[in-house]
Length: 70
Image (tube, rainbow, N blue to C red; front, side, top):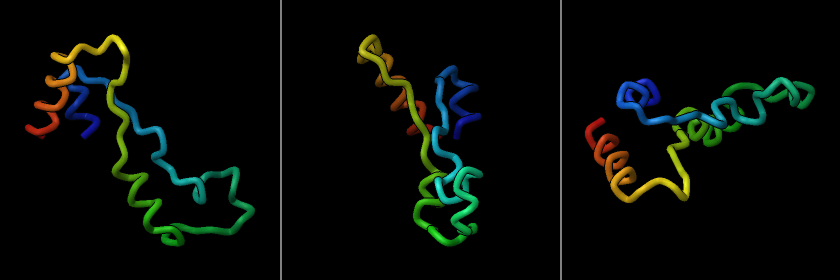
């Protein structure tokens, strides 16, 4: 989805693409992939879309329509 949005000039970012239990800082806890399947699924599907007080209603609708087309 991120690549599709980029092609349409809509900025997006995946802020939490690696769930906390799989991040290097928590390796000492001994968790592995599959231990928290819900957080792993959410991490693989979450996407942050443009958000700003300066985003016009027209811009918002443009983002909505492009996502609906995806």
